[in-house]
Length: 455
Image (cartoon, rainbow, N blue to C red; front, side):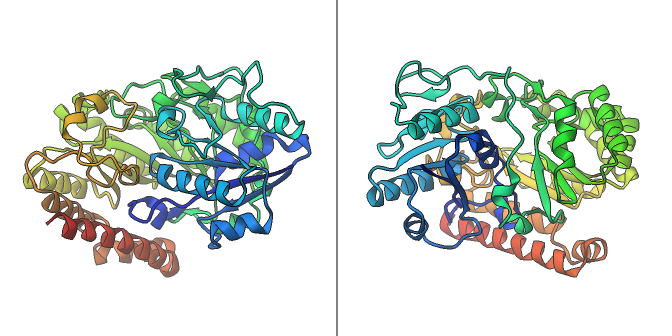
């Protein structure tokens, strides 16, 4: 039995970080690890890098089962790929999962998709592969818990079983291409699932049904030992939850003699309150932290249920700067902002000395609490545009074109000024800076296209 694990690029109109980053398909590597002992013929094709048409990929080695995963933006391309698969290979089965399918499986429902996984992805995938390889009915009782059928409610995830370590050998032919900003080559790993906090806008907590689960530290260190790349992007929703766990990680890394450079997600309040922990983590290899500052206004932070303050945001940025750790700040742009609020945010970010920013128009993603509140103001239902970069809600005080123009101006003011690019060249070299600059230019052209189309 031939199984193809397929990673698709997002639609062309999606504005995304794919222009400044390309990370390994960790979820597909975990699926590969889950079925290695089933003696199936397994391959992965990363179509972010493999430029062959899908039809050529399918004809080269016709699979019996194709597995795909993706975000909300991937829904159109996943459905189109499933249709093409069945047109060329009518007997081939298609299984789809991913974070959007785990919260809104009905959005992925399509006649050409045979199985939709809404929870327990690697367990369901393994059981479906086992049944198909053995000639069993994949829909036979008992159904794998997590396999979704039309009209059913969301299944409960099983947090008692941790996934196997990812099979990174299956992506060996692509690995030298994977990077995140200046972190190249870069591997991904996950040490926990979910987040114990309750930010109203957050989609990640809906995936785990508001639960937080940690992998055993022994398993984390064992996996880390086997990673060849010098840079490791820890993609936990929040790595900085517990002082004790972070310090345990640092001690284990030191004792194991592991020398890596780390990029993590972390909250501003933890960083501000625990500079000693961040200092220890810096000595263990920390190089950058993605911090959800979200806003410089107290009323907006309260509305987002962020449970942080502007003072904590500012202190966190200062702590990281003192340690020589890059701060990659994410900010939410209010739907009812005017030009003054854009300017105030720019003044604040510039005062803090932040150069790496991700500006996200407020996006009430399906499955989150705010979605119903903003349903009457939505201007698009095209999944390709729900990328945290397009406006999906009618702005209250600016036209669409004016709002997009303010985003462009703010990006150029903060990140793309000549002085900033010179600093990048000195820190990371001309080649890496030019690559990042080219990606940023592509994003800018996408935004300019939105300005023109909105006039």
